[in-house]
Image (cartoon, rainbow, N blue to C red; front, side, top):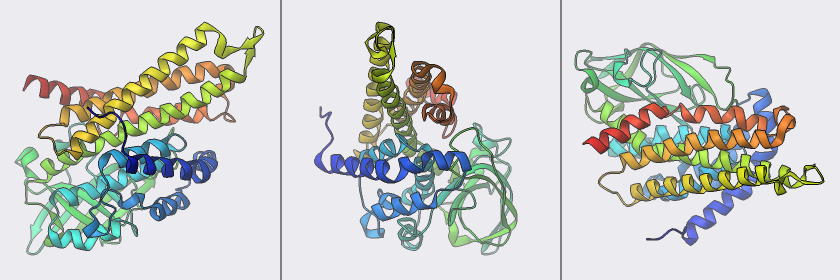
Length: 378
């Protein structure tokens, strides 16, 4: 069993770290304070090839594996969760096309998504979050078009993405089997955007409502067959939730690094607090949990790369453990900082706020436990 990254993965990880330290880390506090969408960071990711990493080379992408992508997400998350969140949401919008897009759709959209535009993924509604099949947004067939009506909420990259994969009911009586998926381009008549949400953390990423009012989408923009939308969505989430685990690992690593540095410098009772057993043991536990989560995330990504027959449970395990691990690590990191950790001039305060969303989006911890347990029972 191989536990080491290969040379290509190590090189990509190093490049992502260098860009993060030089470009993303210095802007992170400003992005958080202002809530501005970090287009400069998006441009840096585009120029580095991150936006097209896992898109096949034949469609203008880099053709890299999922482990490499998770390495990039982890490194960016050590400094700026908003930037890594934009990247993860982008690939949520890319994956359905890779999974189920027609050849024509792939040739039209994937080269654009590899660099020129952001993607997004719209499934959540006010009354259909964890229970996604309960969505009310409809897509009625009218000749060679579908007419979409309804509202999606909490859509990352909403209003900024050039195209969105939208899930809607083509058969309201069929439950999950009545869901279909569509490519909806920004600027399509009938599509509008609600206000940008004012979030506790992850403040640079843009989350908006998507409002569909007699929004006409050509039939050729349907992804997959009618009624296949829910399966496409679930397969997409199985494939992408490891990147949220990588976010959690990166954020926890960033918080740990800050805590370790502070503990080495802060002197109490005549010696650095890192030399006091109470703090030293906290640091030991934090480092151990981060490494355990990292291995779970990389293993799940490697299973996806190997096209394993089943990896849904492993993907959910990685997301569940890593996200809850990051909660514990950030809590301890702030505790190590004491009162200073509560102040905005120290980055740990931002890490603490940023962390909370990781246990919620792309499937709450409770949903991950449902996925894992259903696989165990089956």
